[in-house]
Image (spheres, rainbow, N blue to C red):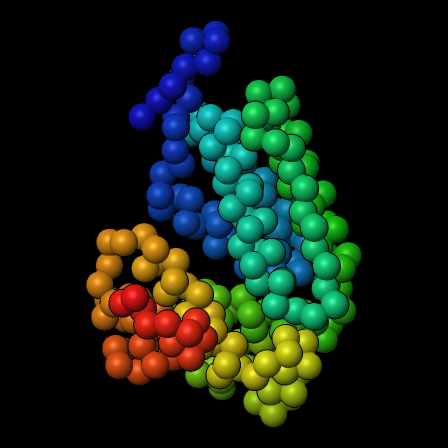
Length: 219
């Protein structure tokens, strides 16, 4: 679908789904792994794609908001780590260029890099990224520790210290939160939601869900 601006120039309403997924994954991973150089390169590639595809400015703005939301969702789990991203209001996008919006996003992420430079936190942030990206799979503590590049025992110690809970409880809570969102959507059965968040046994899913929410997923 396309729309036209005041000058009659055609913009696409949406970013092609595969392109959007690839760009989101690349940007989020580079941000959370504190790789400034790779993030800058990924950001340049993203905005070059938006220009080539003639994506409308408001859609690009929403994309940037989604990136910041994904980062913020993960960082909220880390104690003593404050990240308050800021982008101009969506309706203000018509008054700024794509380059200015790109610079705004870059500034937001640079502020994150400054806050998250502590190598101890960087290990856990990498682990949290991996958990959030793979919670729907059969995820093990060893897999996450390996991805973070630290030993299993050290991971357990640092994870609890930085998040306030152990890996198993964190993963269960995350799955319940994701399940709540899917159930509110109204399109999925309870057993389907259980599978979608990485729990194959629907009875166990209901038990965990009630443990964290106080009610059954069917309520």
